[in-house]
Every structure is written in structure tokens, then in C-alpha cells.
Amino acid sequence: MGILKNIFRRAAAVQSLPAGSLTVDRHGAIITCTVSSAYPQSLLATIGHAVVTLLREARTAQMPLSEISLHFGSLHITARELRGGAVIFLLPQTALASTPKTIRP
Amino acid sequence: MNHSHKILLLDDDTDWLALCRDLLSALPSQPELLTTTTAKRALSLLETESVRLLVCDLKMPRMDGLQMLSIVRRRFPDVRTVVLSGMDDEDYRSRAYALGVDLFWPKSEMQRDVNQFNECLESLLGREGETGFRGVQSKSLLDIIQMECLSASSTVLRIQRGPLAAKLWIQEGELTDAEIDGVRGEPALQRILAWKTGSFENLPPEPGRERTIHKSVNALLLESAQTFDEAANLNLTGSADADDSARHQRTMWKLSQLTRESAEFVIAIPPVGQGDPDALGTQNSAEFSQWATHAEKMARELGDRLGAGPLLYISGQGLERKVILMPRGGKIFLTGWPVDADDNMAEKTKKISAAWES
Image (cartoon, rainbow over all chains, first blue to last red; front, side, top):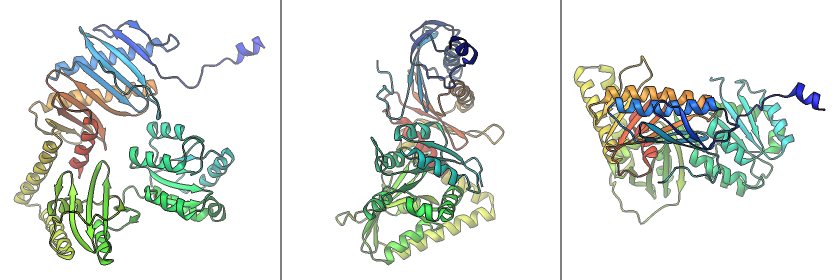
């Protein structure tokens, strides 16, 4: 049985959405993270980089933002500017979910 | 016809779903068929997939079809809905139509006449670009009002066009009041009559409603038709004066929307290569547009990589203002708000963008 498992092992077809928080520095590099270690680090790095870029470009466009939220159909990403970097909250959304829609201070 | 339409089938009976899938695969437009057995999963699919038509059963565990339809009606007003139920009961039929479903079809009749059912679905799928009001396709709002008044009925017509909602009060065949976005009377009526598409429902009459319209229905409709003709002629002549006048009117209309919703600025950014951004209320439209275009592209790509569904909107807050970035109808809308604005900015941005395009 073990042999068969090894031969036919395959990755899960559906990737779960990330839930938790992370802090990133001004370059988007992850400093701390509470998201499950099963979630690909490369995708978390992409999120961190995108958020820091959005905040930096908003500053350049004369529209400095201290907080930004990206609302997708099934995931909310809320980020607060933190000394050039950011603290990022990842909130998966389901149709009837009881998860919070926003982060309150 | 668009071949990428998606139909979502919701029924707790998996055998019936399989049968439906087989029957609907014969539709000439070859739509993509999605199936699910729970309302919860159906709502998730509606969030993440651009579903054109929902075919829904009524009797289901946990959340029944009527509950589901009322949620869909509220959260996804553009999705066409069809009820396919084993309960061919007049009460259920009335309740379903009262919720604004496009079609109620008993399962037994569907099995008897699949071709007719498929024709109805095909017709619903193909109505995207047509004018007319849901329930009375190919009839304008003028026709609907005339029908109500000629029958000397008393009712309140609630008309919905995307996020915009309006009401018309008809009392014993007389049009007595109209309201949209806090505007009442004839100005409101003229604005409502300009709508070419939407959905409407009849609400119980309100005989105590204060009358603000005193002209006869025919006079009002004639005036309105005359205004439309004049506007069409202005467009045909294409003179500089006419263009200026039309542009001025459009700007005033947009400005009034901006003020009504208490927004600071609006920028409507068309797709690259299809014109310049249209901005009101800000001097920094070039910088803001550039940021918005790049932010929308970056967020969309991020959403695709994460499998997080479509980008609904981006909200931001700074010391000076709050902003909402929302892709709608091929354009990107960036709206600015005071820092003390409430949490309804996304809904208000939807209203502004709808008014912008109307």
C-alpha cells in the first residue's frame, strides 16, 4: 500500500485560501507570519510585495494611504502601513461565513 | 450570441442535476453548466464565477429556494433566475414571481417539453444587449406606465436599474408622484423615463402619499417623448452648440450625483487606448489615474494567482481622504471621500458609476 501511495501521490487540486496575518518590511520581505506553514511562502511573498508596492505608488501619486484593503470574491486583504513596511491581515470570505469582514482597531 | 454564458444549476437531488445537465447541454448557445447541491456552495460560485443564469429548485434542506432567490436578487441583481420545482403550486409560483424570478417552470412540464424550456432559457441568455424591463421585455417604461394608468389601477411601481432604485406612485390611473435618490416630482420622472432597461415590481398602493405630479399622464409622456426626440435630433445635427449643451448637461448631472453621495472626486478611467480619463472634483487626475490603472492590474493578477475570485473593489484610507477603486463595465472608477465618510462608500461608488454611464 505504501508503494502505491508513493507512486500515485499527487498535489491537491484545490489550494485553500490563506488566513492569518503577516508583517513585511519596506521591500515586501516577510518578517513575521501566522499563516499556516502549509501555505506556499512564494504566494505570501507575492502578497507582501504587492501591498508594499501599492502603498508606495499611492504615495508617489500624491495620495498617501495608511491603510488599503483589497476585496476579492472570496478573500479580503487588509494592510496597514507600518514604518515603510506593512502589517497584512488575510480574511477568507465565504457566502455565509461568520468571519469578520473588516479589521477594527 | 455570447458563447461564454454560464448557467448554474442548484438542486439537492444529484440524479436530477445529472438529468438537467444532459438536457441543457443541447442548448444551441452551448453555455458552460455548473452544478451544485447546496445553496451555500451556489452563493460561493455566484461570487467567484460570472454566472448569467441560475436554475434553482424550491424545496431544499437548510436554505430553501425562496430564501436563496431573495439573497440572489439582493446581492446579484444582474443574474437571471429560473425556478424549476416539483411543487406546481400557485402560491409558490406567485411568491417566486414576487421575488422577481424570470421564469417558473414545473419539473413535470420540463420533462414533457424540453424543447420549449430550452427555448425559454436561450431567450433569457440572449437578452443581455436588449432593451426592455424584466418581466415585460421589449416594452419601454413609458408603455408600462401607460398600461398601469389605462387599467385605472392603484399601485407603486418599484423600478431597479443596477444599484439605482426609483419609485412611481399610481393612484386610480393617475401618476401622482415619482422619486429617485431624494429627487421627487416631474424632474425625478424625467430621469426615470430615460432608463432603457431594468426590472420592476408592483408594490401595494399608498393612497396617503402626497401628490407632487399634477399633470395628466398623457401630457407627461408626450413631454417626455418630445424631450427624447429633441435629444436625438441634437445628436443628429452634431452642431457645436448642441454638443456643448449636451456636454454641459452631462457634467451637471454627474456633478449632482457626486454632491448627492457626498463624494469629493470621481475619475472614470477607460481601458488603455480608448480615450482619456473623465474626472470631476480633482486636479490630480493624471497621477491618480495612473495609480488606479496599475493598482487594478496588480490586484487582478494577485487575485488570479491566489484563486481568490474576481476583484470587487479596493478601498484605501489616508490622513486626507478615503478612496475606493472599483472596476465596472470595462472602466475603472476611482472615487475620493472625506475621512469621516461612512462604510457605504463601495455601494455609493456603484451608484455613481451607474449614473455616470446612464
